[in-house]
Image 1: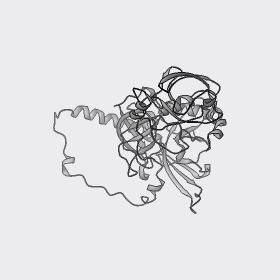
Image 2: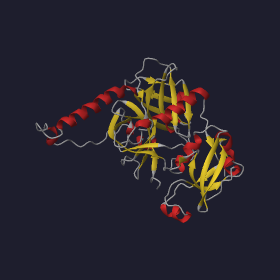
Image 3: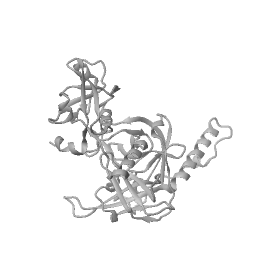
Length: 372
């Protein structure tokens, strides 16, 4: 699979600076737009019903969507603090008191608690009481000391199908309470580069218009349930090009449970560097009839992969009987396994299959082995 070109975060601070206080230029609508649709026009009733559904979801979700401002310490090459803007959504969690805000880690990363402001749709302002982050998935959770706030419902992203209508909420360019619509364009997207800290990539792709400032806003289905957190876009200009990525809400829920229970997320690892691109021409050279699997570029000494006998140029075809689609699928699968678990690997090596068994290591301890 080819890597998506030029993905970008949606934090928005670099774009909002020139727009605060400057109105956007809007073209007037011509008289034709004001004319009512002709009676009996084909599809009119269906379009009206769909529009009513969009409006109902927007009315339901709007009060729970927040904008977030974070003031971060100056970078090494700058004297002034960095002002970051993004979005979030208010939720409640079973067994937990208070109200929580889901957002992206890159929106609030490095900002002290007292420099983070959560702006509600009704104009109330809150400072978070606590903060949990998982940089590897780009998920952050804020706790607010308030019980009477509007909240949204978490849905089930496993049931999301390509082609389904979705709505995206956020604050692009500082324009709070913005709603756009589109469809689910693809699932399980991971072949995008989002920086060294983000390893867990399993995105929903949508063509709903998402722009800088929308990071952390919810992607919802037509039942008004959150199915994803808007996180990144692929763009040559830095603005919407119809290719946007959201973290599936089921992954977010799993991360949140671990953050609240342990303060961090436990992940497994094997200790290999995998090729980010595995094309048909590569598979053909290795004697495979299809470009599927995780192609091993490097095996780090002393890691579980090395102890299991993994070698450079191996292609991992299966793990515990599950067919590996690509390197991102394999990374996510191993990361989700607890340290100490045995995993059976079917590997393509020198034009034949080899069976290996590896013991999953603890990523929190193994990162030092993988440093250059």
